Length: 52
Image 1 (cartoon, rainbow, N blue to C red):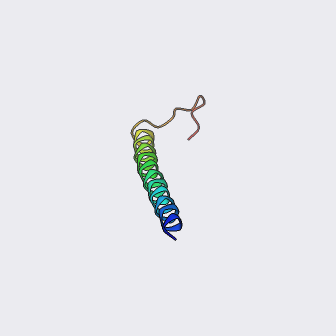
Image 2: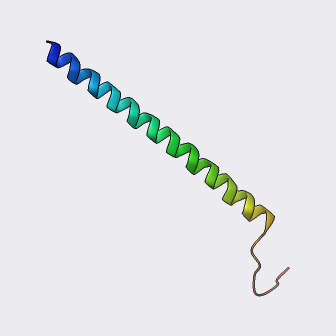
């Protein structure tokens, strides 16, 4: 019975570490996306032919 509880504890720790890693990566990607979108708003792309 003790062996099963050790395995379960290791599994829980591994799952928590995985969730932490995913959340951290998601926040980093979100900041990167926000920065990229803000850059696009500041400097719009220029088109070769000027149609109004």
